[in-house]
Amino acid sequence: MASWQIRSWLSNNLRRVASCSVSTQAALPKNTCAAFSLIRSQPSQYIVASLAGRKYLLAPRDLLTVPHLKDVRVGDVLALQDIHEVGSRDYTLRGDPVISPSRVKVEATVVEHTKGKMEVVFKKKRRKGYQKTIKNKHPYTRLRIGSIEFPEP
Image (cartoon, rainbow, N blue to C red; front, side):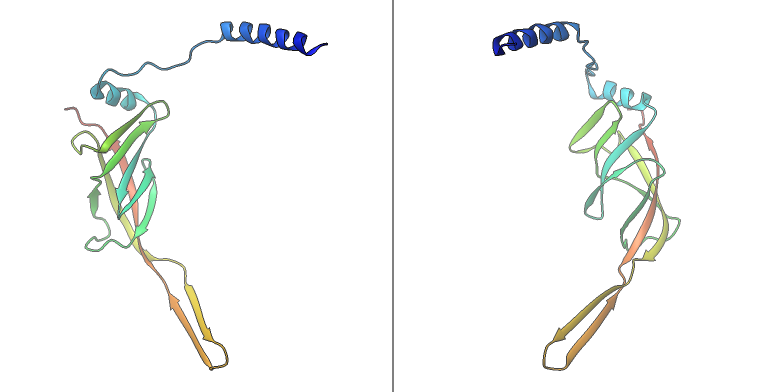
């Protein structure tokens, strides 16, 4: 086959495939209340929240390890305030920069205070006889994420 024949065959078949394609684009909600109801109707949701200066992607029943949080005890319940994004498999709603706490409520329960693995730093200066070993364990707090609730306005 000549190159012009291949090009014409490809263009004809691509036109046929393009005419048969089905649009699978989901309908966009008209306002934020409709968006929240669509996300609420999905079987599983997630959030992106800031905690201890970092953003975490969280789902219900997740176990989250963060740097040590002072002034909390095991069993305390924390309400997550800085929620940047709420979503499900099909829909996502982003805040600017955060979503109002009156729209989304997520609670985290303090499970334990723990320490990380032993970190060993060995320092040495050659030909001076100077050797120093520094051992350290960083403290962490573990949190269990509760359910994601969307209270009615």
